[in-house]
Image 1 (tube, rainbow, N blue to C red):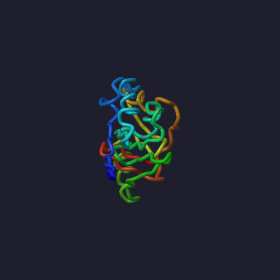
Image 2: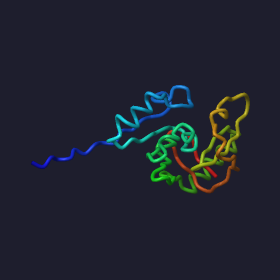
Image 3: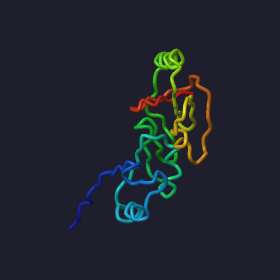
Image 4: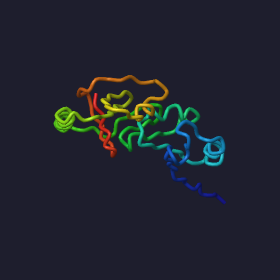
Length: 154
């Protein structure tokens, strides 16, 4: 008698507040569950944050798929892919609004970031905690749309 192999569905875990509670580490018991108990499943990690900010947390899961920027950036098979790019015309409009109104912004591209933050804001403490990216100028290279809306400009 030949048994049918049951296909398993992928399991997607949001990082922050779901399996990461301190903003820095996955607890050991959850790591054990992910590595051994769910080893028959495709495990995918997701976050509103960019891929670079997931790197320090997911060092034990480098071979898994990561979805960052609310789905706008995906790391799969050790390569980063930009999924949602804003058109040049729309980028120009967004940049004009930012400049005309002197707005604060935090903008991620697939790895690096640009920002203008006035006042005492602690958001920069959470950006690139591993110090693996660089601050870039606000100019058009490509733009990634995320639901935040945290625009990605270069």
